Image (cartoon, rainbow, N blue to C red; front, side, top):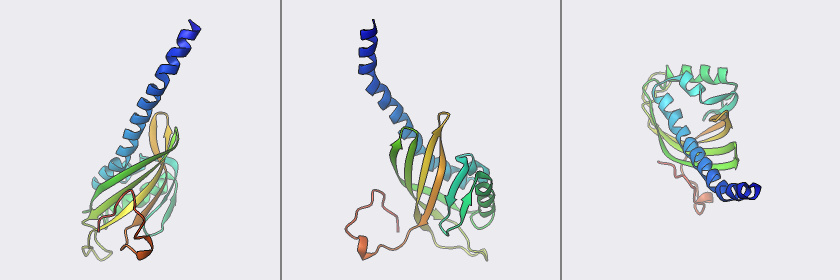
Length: 168
């Protein structure tokens, strides 16, 4: 009987692991869209619930937030002001597992409808976000985030192909 159970686990183990991995990959691939959905609702709290309590997050302009409270406060402010009419969308997503409960999620985004400090419309822009997500109690949460504005391509990287293309 023990041999039978051992063989059953041996045979089913890989498929169970793949199913778990497929579910995790689907959840991680959906994480950027959940972030964007909260953004498009202009909901700082909705963004914050996607993060760990001690999240580290760096914005495109280098503002480093440490902790969910600061993350929520900052995003509530910008989404109620210069991004109150903005629409953000995911352009592409790439997931890489670092451990069973840890993954990097890169995604490209494009935003329209933002304004400057004077309330004047600014041109659409795009960028790439890197999230480090950790699985806790069955849920993937953002532990670390780094957001970067897109920039014109430079010759130094012309021969390097990115897994996610930035939109101009």
